[in-house]
Length: 206
Image (cartoon, rainbow, N blue to C red; front, side):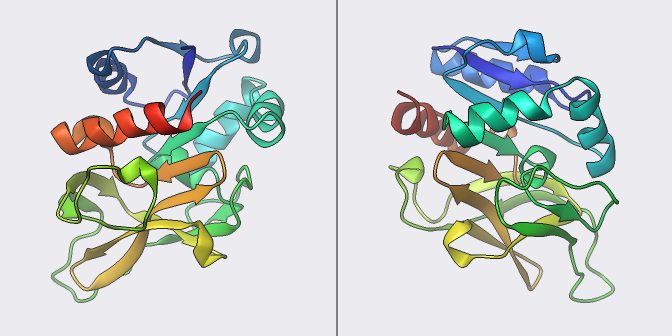
């Protein structure tokens, strides 16, 4: 299986590669368009700023070939944290347009009171919809979050899972056909994250 991890210079790629290795698969890191080849799966991780990530993708010449692979060839694609946010049309964090693969915009988390810290950092449960990416995973699963923004979907059908942070409920996972995204970090979420990634590769990648 040819798994490519997109390197936008703002990613914790080491932890992700190690988690994929635990599953028994091999991945390669891609930073330029001529390195993409013909992947069986694409993973777009990321931490940091929306505009900087989009500028990095554009500067590496990756946007056009990624659009072809993801939208036209329907290659299974997984976005993590900032990587997922890039799937939106825009973000309140910056001025750049996003990839626009899933209808919606990225918005800043809202603190329910003055004692609630932003960014949201730590372990939280998710409430997930029926999807085989969650096969064998119960509703008490916990995942690791580090973020100040969330994906506000235009269409509720694209909402894959939700999380409540101190009274503020937000979308923590999105889906659109072959495109999946999670606001949390599966690669840092121990056994729950490992199960989730296993399901993605088993059920989504052929």
